[in-house]
Length: 449
Ligand code: ZN
Image (cartoon, rainbow, N blue to C red; front, side, top):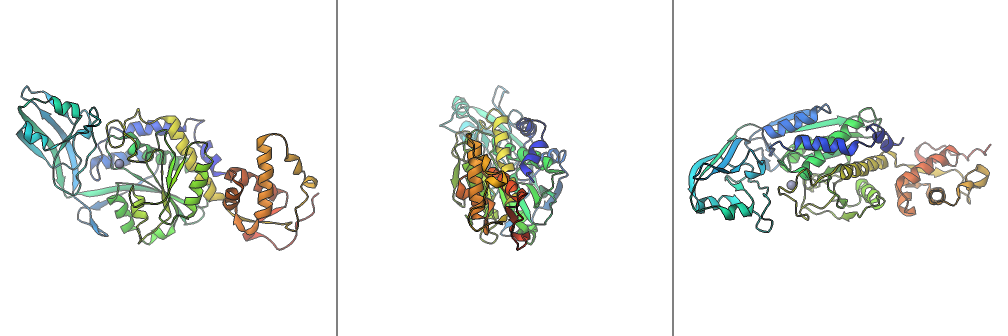
């Protein structure tokens, strides 16, 4: 079964990129953090598309070496000058307040204010994104140009936030396949109004999960939407035994820009997902980068910690931290585009197709080459490029299908896209020249009719 085709058919025409974009735009304005109403509101939006299961983990709960922090919520925040003008207002951009800022309401001098302001001197028109989850502090974030324009006067600073015992919230959805073995998709849901990092990943996975409904799969697919780091840690702490069922996994973040694509391998480096993603990216027609694992990045850090060592890699377009828009107000809806989201969706559905259909086959006529012409197969050698590829695919499959090389092995050796190898293997199976190794009876192929 071609899962990729099923996933494509489940989207309306070629509108998948637009649908992912529209959902990213819908959740973009929400003020998210690692806890609080913003996460819940985002999960409710996801839950309007898929039957999401919501989990609430109380403040103070130990999760491995960490403790669930207090819940943070914010109503309003601003800086007002002596003329009564709000020179910075949280209502205009939720990036203006450092996430997890403690409440404050006081009058300060410019010098005092400057000690609580973050800017980007090299990008003076952008607001930086800053957090202080585990150290009590408060701060505003603003364009450097604005800070430089401030007069030496008294300012009223107000952050109407609340840090109190509450919960950490995450959501998950399981698409059940024929087996309990899982493919994990994970996206962080803790960033405020940043479009690529990571409304794009959340939106892509929501639409993917939605389209998997009704598609029969071999693996079960788990979609996890959790706050970065602490959310993944909490999930692993509560699902340690179950995590052994994860056979493949992808962290999906920053998939809406036109860079890359970039795949960062799992800690194992040679997991099926690593080979699958490297293969899919190599044949995607773009300029892919395939990186070895490093213990810096997103939640693959937790999945790939030595005590778990799960086969989970990271898919991105541009690499995080290597684009000027990263963690700034320039990571907005103009930075992501439907066509890039559509490409990212296609890469993931190709990867699903590979893991679903990779299998061992056996050539039923292994002694010398079978006579292809007699079976109407030799005629495939024509002039066009596809026919030539199909012919090479046939020769590679027949040669390597000895029960030890899977279709992905063959696609790699032949340097042909998995889909070509898969299609050709189906044809050879139909002609009786190939049988699934695990179901193959020990008898020669029936002569062709
Ligand atoms: Zn980030």
